Length: 294
Image (cartoon, rainbow, N blue to C red; front, side):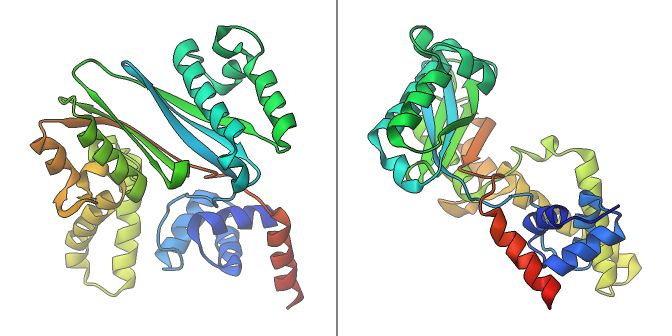
């Protein structure tokens, strides 16, 4: 298949590898992104298969709590300056309150609902705010989390809402403990709560990559398997919350920290403003052209 500049760009953002290395990997894998990621990792060109995406869009996250329900939302705008605007800040509060009250299933449903069940729709309210502020604003996403009276929410906003983390802990009502875990989530960015959540296919894929890496290092075949299992532990530490060293006390794992509080981590949600969104497409196009001319 034809290897387009857009495909190369996507692989480049996933792996951080050079443009020509990405192009070669795609050619070798017939344009399959997942196989190309593995190809680059096995060759040592890409260091990790974390699909973080380029953080480019501006905006803010916001967390609202009402009784046993909480919501984390992300609203995007064009410039960081707008996030400090009082109207934008009020919009965040209004949207959070609305979602908790009206319980829409999707953003699309929310946009069609009347704000707080009366008056103008959310979409009309957004358009009014856009007209006043003079920038494009979009309600990108939200997640609602529910708990019981015996549980605790942890809410943490970093850099004024650039990153938001919402945790749910069972077995404790101590919101400070839950907030500490949310702070860790914001800082370290785990993908899963525990190893049991990691799909077998993902573990097997990582195991195969680690095996290829070890063999590529010239390690004897009889010790490769032991090396792979040892390195898998590091893999889980990178992606699983409970396996990670707690940011406020690196000598203690998150699992031990919450267990000492008589709690368990039920779930977490982490939003980073603009993750997966892109800006300045023309810059990449210019880079491609410069490479072609060489």
